[in-house]
Length: 246
Ligand code: SF4
Ligand code: FES
Image (tube, rainbow, N blue to C red; front, side, top):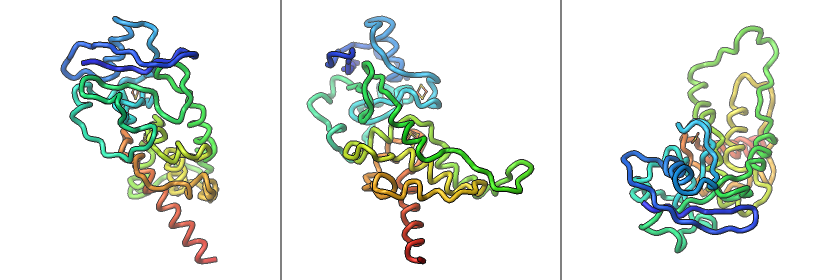
């Protein structure tokens, strides 16, 4: 299989083609290692766990944000991913049957080749104050109703990979938009019964809940099935009904 890989060295950008031997079960990350070890040791990419846990290896694979360690080379062309296309995800000339196109995630500054600067993503995460402020009177462990835990689980499974951030057309249009992952996490803390704070207001502005246009790309590409679009919709309904009561 041929891989067409985006390259950037701080000055010039372009694409390099590499041929990687076909191997049963080979992931895109394995293929990138083959390139780095056997063909071009200057290729840069990010990874850590190699098991879809750390969230480090998200990149555009044939114009779809995916985890390189979880995506098998042989399956890329077989898998139809139904997402809303916009400029960064357009299937241009460069996607073709005779190679797999590998590029960095959109909306984040490229540092080198496939490595992006995640600061913007984590700054947005920080804005939603992602920690629990415990209610008073809880002197022992914080017991939670298992039903409530199951409700929260969908949102706690996020591995902060930023695939949703790169898939979202609104992130491309609105520089300040908090993005799907931060909003999903804020909704998760809002629903946590151990937390004493009202916090929906942290995103009650034009770059928060109200910026989402419900393309739902976030949910489609999420490797952990987190549904940011559902949390955003619920948060909006709650805010609207609070307004109606006032
Ligand atoms: S919500 Fe999903 S796609 Fe977005 S950062 Fe979390 S794990 Fe990644
Ligand atoms: S290397 Fe950790 S998620 Fe891919």
